[in-house]
Image (cartoon, rainbow, N blue to C red; front, side, top):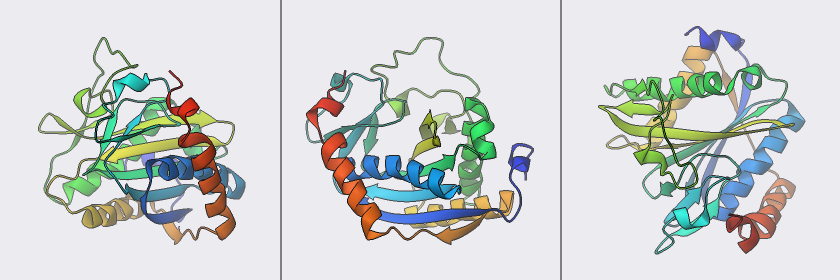
Length: 236
C-alpha cells in the first residue's frame, strides 16, 4: 500500500457495477446518475462498461468539431479532457461522494490515487507502466485528442499513453471517467487485476451493485433528454 492509499481504511466497502455495452448516450447518462447514487448512499462506486458502436466522446469544454463524426457517434462527456475514441478501449468510472477522503484530495492527487491501481494491474502482466511526469507546456484543450496528448499522471508504457482520464467535481462529489488501451491484455483479465489491486493495495471490499428498474429508467430518460440531444452535444 503506497502512501496515498493510506487515506483509505482497510476493509472499506465500495460498490462494483459490472455493466454491459451501452449506447454512447446511455453510458454518459449512467455515469452522471452514478455520481448521484454514490452521494445518496455515501459509498464510492466503480463501474466497468463498453460501447455498442464505434464512438467518440469529447470533453465538456471541447468544440464539437474536434471529433471526427464520420463513422462515429459523438457524445459530449460530463467531465473534461480530450477527444477519446471508443472501439478497443476498456472504460471505467469511479464515483465518489463528497464526504469521502478521495474527494478531499486535490485534482492531481486524486488522479494519481486511482491510476496507481491501473498501473499495478498492468504490472501483473509484466508491463512496466508509469505516470507521465508533466503536461505539455501548451495545450489547446478545445481540440486536444486524449491519447496523442499525454498530461501529468496519465499512464505510459514505453513512452506511449495507455490510459487517461477526466474528472468533474460537483456538490455530490467526484466523477472520474477513465479509458484504457489494454493492448494484448484481455479486457476481462485486466478488469480482474484492477479489482484485485483495489483490494490488495487499499483493502477495499467490493459488493455488487444491482441497478433497480427505477434507476435504469432515470438513466434512459437522462440519455434521451440530455446526452442524445443536439443542444448538449453541440454546446460549443
